[in-house]
Length: 314
Ligand code: GLU
Ligand code: ZN
Image: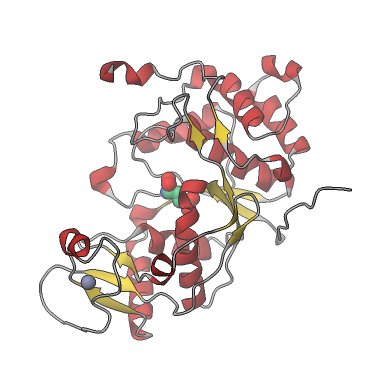
């Protein structure tokens, strides 16, 4: 008997994207997200767009945007359509915030991190009923649905959330005067008509929040697929926060081959000496998302350059 394969709906014409935040250079985990989203789009004859999520200047690294673009180019990735920059879309985010406010779907929240900690660490929609209007700095929160929005990922399975998490009103405009990721990402995906999102499992928890935005904005939600996070040889997540090494254009084809392997695609060994373009073309022709594993661990098979940036900490 065939094992039951998870279900997935793909709408055509397929429009996908890769949406890095320029908080540092691309690391191996983000390369895997770029590759999976690219192969999934191209295997479905789709368009694949690049969007730079430069929404949070204090967390950005000067020059990171250019580095990311150069690195993607050196890996042979080609995106369809012009790159969209979130830093140029503030007016649109404002419009949508106004639209949500007009629906009475948002409210001002004056809670500080400290006060939320004191209330038990989870924001329990404290300011929703208060309706306080004041000049004090505040965030804007979106009212979450009173019935939790379920989400089942084709690779990761059913998202397990406590009711408190599922019902939490979440921030769409930050107290420090910045648009929140949840808002911008949904507005952009709607405006760019993205209907299939392949991204890292670190964003799994965000999905029900984003589904709520689609609901309130009367838009059809895309289908999502969350690829596993890459764990380094010590079992911790590869991320900019823990100084995952930047990937180097000169190791591009090795890294691509390795990424294909980790995505469960069984690349032929001759491909190891192929160019990036050849590896990508093979990947498109042989792509099977059903083979993506639920977890990826670099244990026992470290990346060539892994650990380089850890030297300073040793
Ligand atoms: N900009 C987000 C990140 O780099 C990804 C957004 C998304 O794919 O939804 O983590
Ligand atoms: Zn509050």
